Length: 581
Image (tube, rainbow, N blue to C red):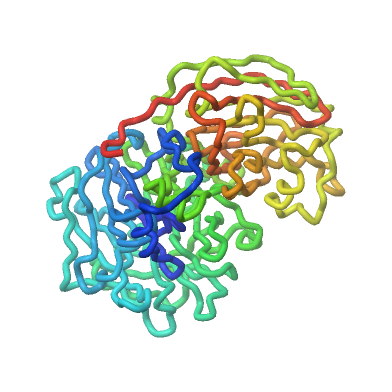
């Protein structure tokens, strides 16, 4: 789907990604927009996010850094809030927070993309020229997928306002015999090795569709590409969309690495894929052997017990290397959780998650993520709560600022001796956090937890979204196991809203009884980071009561042990500049 030192992220569903076989074209719904009837609460303009990126209207989706500007290219339907008429819209920013919309960058215009310009990525060539490679559709009846390139018309323009697609070289990659032509898309950012050859990945699936595949292609001139005989990696997961492949440092620092950095004892690689079948992103950390063109996950079970960037509503993500601040930044897309008819009536659908800095945990076992520092410039009026003990079954309201658009950081403490009171973990759910959260929701009393936040809550608490931790004891060892959940089952009185619980285990040492949580609350999205970014969950919610100044924040404890809020800080979040939005 996208890529780069530049990258492009595409959406699914109402914002599908620029992947392809599962894209659904909603031609009739555009014509029906004027007559669509949905609950007034869903259409409420106060539910449209305030500081998460969204297009001026209709439908979204990917970034790159070039001459002092961050560029975000995204899939956009200029005619409606559904998947159809897709072009590559283009916005630019100095700080990844305030954005100015430019004119469309890429639209169907050559035979090899006549029926669609889908996902892709950007790479900066040695002479400084950025080049976009993207998936084009060249057949009217099937999603026959080929790869095209586009270059800036004027390389000296830092805003990259015009792009050209050389028809004499496009398409530059076509599916070979034995490759499913409808599952061959989303070229990654390319990397250049010591042999001076470029390499990139294309996501695909085996002919039967049961195994996801990342094919390696090599080129010396970025125009003529040859497929390596064996794929970089494959797994029995179904189709791989939007692959991403990049190096990370093993020293535990937040410093990012440029995509072409090669493997060494101090460098690991991350392979991430978006699962077309399950609609979530997962990744593994491992070793890349350039000579063999093979990637081997460190965890042999990594393709089965899958690590995820985000255990919530987060898909078609893409990272890019930011040379200005020497960091790797992750952007993902979140679709709506209402219906397609709702989106047509609203006139918009889909958002981008707040950009996250991503780096390798010192353990080497997983990635850490944290909102980019620039988002803190939006913080306004604040409130602080210190050393407040929350008794079992109690909750405390946090007041003093508006809570519909806020940034909340909280540190919790439980007595280390109290951890012995944690309830046992059912071995059958030891690898299924989401199912466990569905059973152990926020209103199900436990031993140590559930404790956490009720966000976007109404004054009478009939509406509330719970973001919480629950500590359990592993079978046999009695070792503490931390579960993090977002439970939106009571987020709205509207019966037509999809309200799934989301959850992930947190690989953290809680023997000292301490754990932290950060939640970015933005009207209809709750984006949470547990234990310093070890586990992340994004959820879309649509309150009917807790809207605007009627949204409240609470700290709650539904366990049998006391929980202390060592420190809670919350800030109102200002709305950034989004020209045209």
